[in-house]
Each structure stands twice: as structure tokens, then as C-alpha cells.
Image (cartoon, rainbow, N blue to C red; front, side, top):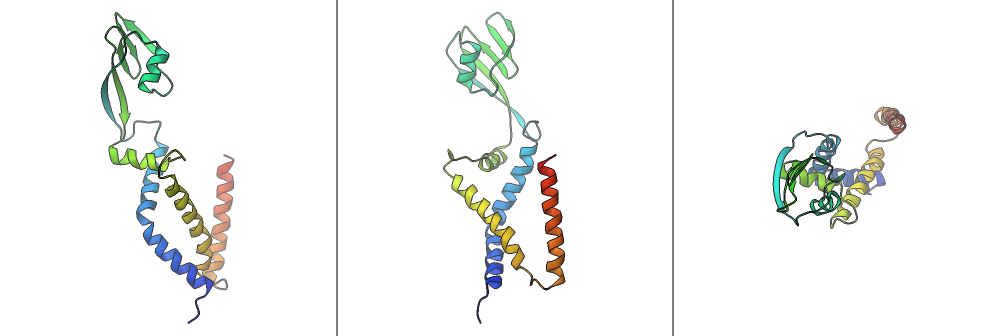
Length: 170
């Protein structure tokens, strides 16, 4: 039996889909979680204490504790400087930082989802993105072009493309 392009595409689509089922679920879950990243959804408070140098300025303190947006002192009582994410004792250098963090596994999933070229596994995101692109292209070989299923599929494709264009400009 001669293997056609359509048959080859369906076979690769099938087994690549099975192979990537776990990572697709992970990207799906982490993508949904990232929608809520500016909220405390599923996060719990984690308090850490860091021994820093005494008498740091707000800018130096921000750099030391790697605080997004910087440390903005809200009030000072004696040697204690209070800021939204915690407090800092200017005399002893002890800083107490409160952060809202996702559970470990969800945090790791989100971190992988946001990988950049600085990450040792950025190639996984490239492979996954190319695999999704292959799924898009190979899906057009799942049904014979003369069938009604294929023709209806083209209408759904057109609808999806129009929805995407609308979402890009909303």
C-alpha cells in the first residue's frame, strides 16, 4: 500500500497528539492560571526573613530583596520601615517579606510556560509551538476534501480566523 501525504499527516498528527497530551494539559492549565496572575487566586502567603545590611535606602532594599515595582515605604516607626510587602529594621538589617505564591507545582508550570531564551528549556517552548502549528496544518488532512465534514470544517476555520482577528483588535 502506498502511503499518501494525507495518511502520513494523520499518523503523525495522531501519535504527536498522544505524545504531547501531558504538555498540552500543562500549558492549558498554566495559561488559565496566568490570566489570574495579578490576583491572589490559588495563592497563599509566604513569609520570609532575610538578614540584610543595616541602613539600606528604599532603592537598595528593593534591589536586595528583588521586589517588583520597588519598595515604597508607607510609614516608619522607630527603626522599623513598613512597606506593602513587609517591613525592614534599619538598625538590625532584618527584613520580613510577605509574598503571595502559587503552590510549587503550579508555580513551576507557570514558570515553564513563560520560559525565555534565558531558560535552559526554552527549546521545549519552541518545539511545542511548532507542534501546535503542525496540528493546525495537519488537521486539514484529517478528512478528504470532497467530504461534507471537510467543507463544514472550512466554515468553522473561517469563523475561528474571524474571531481571532476581532480579538486582536478588541
